[in-house]
Image (cartoon, rainbow, N blue to C red; front, side, top):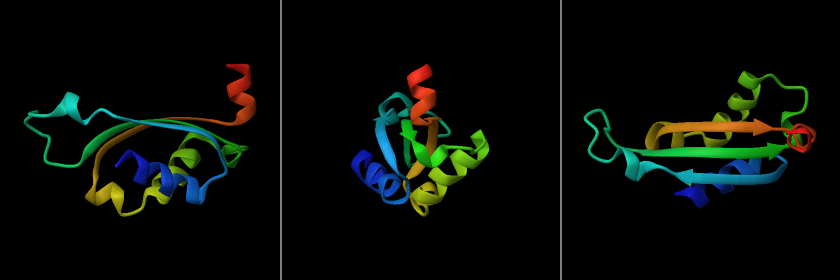
Length: 88
């Protein structure tokens, strides 16, 4: 699933670096885990230039589309531009 997530994001954004981590195993057996995976993402893209944090997250969620309702239960992300990453 991580490669499917990465492909979807790459198809919509100008990605310089992306890392998707599947944390689903940490949530197995949790009472409220009703299906779908748990993922963390680190994304560096110039597509985020001039965008607020909420706008950046919307770009990513839009790229994921139906996966957010069918395949993904939880998705957290850190989004940076290339310049922000260089300063970090």
